[in-house]
Image (cartoon, rainbow, N blue to C red; front, side):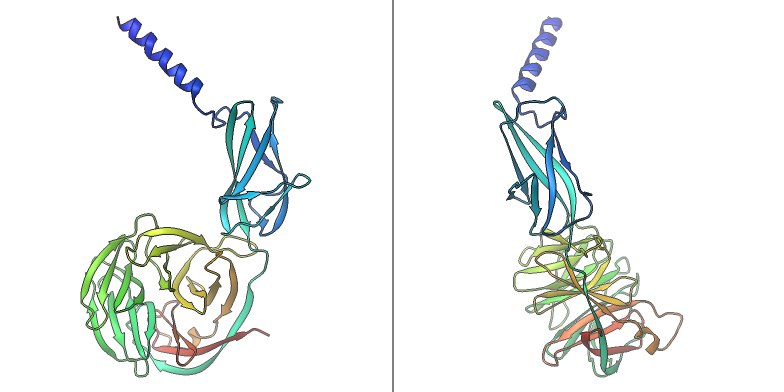
Length: 347
């Protein structure tokens, strides 16, 4: 009886496998690209074909990237995806009554080098030298700041002209505070490795709720536009969060014309672009949120030398835009100064 059962099970398995989609599991076909798959520029034409070692009669092949059809002309396709970075080309191979689906990993880079910018200092203001700055954002003249370090993390409202703290709450000693953004009457603040963010009432900094990160790696920076909240996590990804649920919906990858770039830190959204502190660098990336392309780099070297040189000072971090003054405010971790600057093209 056991032998009969085993025979029936094996027979059923063979039938299921035979009737199912091949999915190219036996590697009878393969997508072949002549160019280097990790350095394709946006709008570049590349040579593409299906490697067919068994000379199977193929009826047709359809290529797609990010859901958009690629048209083959003289053995080439133009690579112009909506989102830059690491992605895939998909090919559906039709032969006889069967269809195989193939994928090929590629990296699509920007086709333009970032524009270079510098700065001029408009004003210098005092800043709390004990504040390990992780996030800055203005609402009118009201400046809100998030600070880090275990046992020292806080959320605070600050008088930007005097550097004095108007109100402040301390985070639990187990939490490392990170970036923030202000949405209507609430403040959203990240923590670093706790996989949790918090929502506060803006008027009195009372904690209202919490949320989890889900897919994103860590909590680094936050900003928002009319449609999305943008969240950096230390990787090459900037996540797009639903403004109501704070769930991660998708992501962009930060990309130059030479590489996929990581470590976007504190974020600020200004005039349709994301401005991001680059962790461990004295600079700011200007990112196109529609594609992930780094379209500009602001060289902020020299600012750190203008603060009091104590053993505690750390890297540049913290960028906020004052809409009425049309200027940026930047500072750093444990800096005793905050600088109001104007960004200008580097000559």
